[in-house]
Image 1 (cartoon, rainbow, N blue to C red):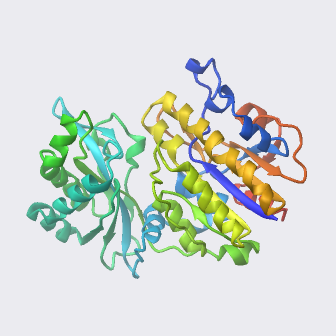
Image 2 (cartoon, rainbow, N blue to C red; image 1 turned 180 degrees about the horizontal axis):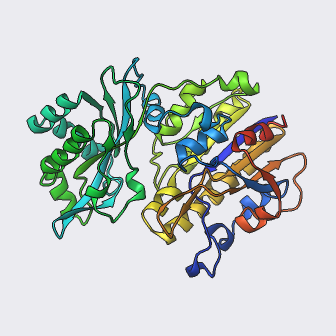
Amino acid sequence: MKYVLIIGDGMSDDPIAALGGKTPLEYLDLPHMGILAGSEVGTCQTVPAGVAPGSDTAILNIFGYDPRQCYTGRSVLEAAGVGVTLKPGEVSLRVNLCAVEEIGGELIIHSHNGGNIEGDEAETLMNDLLADARFADAAQAAGLTIHVSRTFRHIGVLGGPVPEEAVFQTTEPHNVLEQPVARYYPTGAMKKELTRLMQVSYEVLRDHPVNQERMARGLLPANMIWPWGAGRAMALPDFRKKYGHGGAVISAVPLVWGIAELAGLPHPEVAGATGDLDTNYAGKVEAALSGLAAGDDFAAIHVEAPDEMTHAGDMDKKLEAIRRLDSQVVAPLLEKLPALGDFRILMLSDHKTLLSTRTHDGKPVPFAIYDSRRPGTPSRLDEAAAAKGVWVPEGHDIMARLFEQT
């Protein structure tokens, strides 16, 4: 038996007036997701009550790790995903490159990902920022080291030891788009040092040649860093020992790599997997199928695009991201998995991401579990159909349900 998990990040939503009062999943014709819903469809509480909704808490929960018991902060997961191991007393931070603009004397955040900056541009901006004497002095004063990536996502580590009682209060930049930056500067531990780093980064990056070139091309500048998601070292039980199954976790997102790493699962990088609408869907599917054909009995495919398109406030692109999930991920899996024998597929959104607010939401999400031995009659994988199906109140039980262990 082969087992596959598909996470369409943020694909679930609330009803939207422009879609006739339907959610994107209800509005679209998604025939292959409908096949998955033929065996079992229902609703799952992936984000526990009282826990902040996000891919970190929700995906931990989906993998069977209750965030109420193990979660210490998002950045720890992302650090693990890129090979950054925290020493005792250290604190990690996610460091985004964001796009801000001065309007009426205030800095307004337009994009949590610097206009989706990546590659040489992202790397050049961060390396030049770290080399600037003004920023280097501020970073040294804060005890901050930044590990640079080729995306908008970077990892900061505060050396230490940072006292255990220190509480960092930061805001996810994707939750405050089009709002004044000054309302959301860090509070709590090291608020002055972290705020200073943000302000100096803007001074250094606002007129950087890379950003001047981006604006000339009609793109947003990546002109301020935004630290958030502070956390300390985290440990997770081994996934294979927990469930008796294992295999590759395919994603373009360091957060998901980090969960896999801490759970003892491989997380190969796929060329062209970007986390955006143009990600390499076929490459992700092939990586999963290759592992299964080589002897793995489990594979996970995470697609970030619906979430990113929602944060951007682009309904058409969210719809297109979900269509591509159906046609370029679910369809080829249903076509090729039968050659490997019987299989079960769990598909769900990690959390809702709402076009109305461009932020995450902790309400339950629809899921489907397909069983090739009992395919049933095709239905729909959407919020309305799921509400009539089974109810899974604890998200950390859903993986055991895939493995038929409940």
